[in-house]
Length: 195
Image 1 (tube, rainbow, N blue to C red):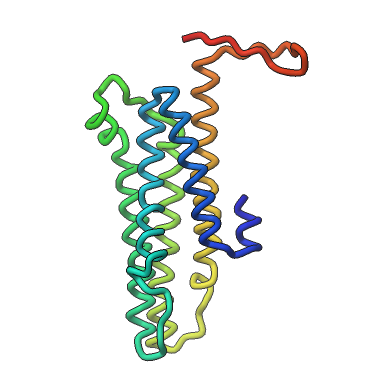
Image 2 (image 1 turned 60 degrees about the vertical axis):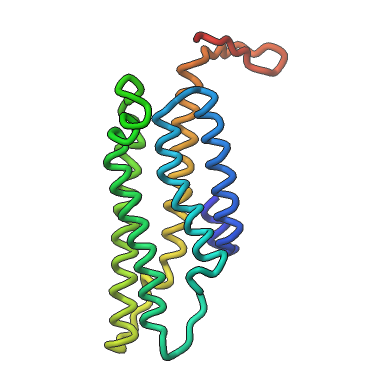
């Protein structure tokens, strides 16, 4: 999924696809009554919605002029850095958030609790490096653009890893909630509900 969007470089289409994808994961988690997946999905999806509103409706303009390029790019990259830090913090406190909303009995540790903070820690590193590179490129006149041009790619890949992790979690819970019979019956697998 990420490779197609990297080649197309269509951020709006990717964000819309990602939101729809995460919405379906949310609905499946809701149907399975899996509060942990619901909480993780909300933690990683709400910032995408906010980002779409902020940049899509022009609250932060993406175009800049030569005289305000440092301030303008700093606002954009600083916004991304703050969002990545907030998501990282919420993922690190995900068990407490789930406990606060749903009660102690619904909290359990998932493999996303181990994987996703690392994904967003990498996002924090890239956003901070892009912010620093922006300063060095504009103020100090260094010819550095590595992080500037790779920030989109990192965003596509990290969101794809997040969405894939959510799908694996839902599939795993679906397998736990339903017993699969792998005998082929008419070309389809028979599914028996165990709950």
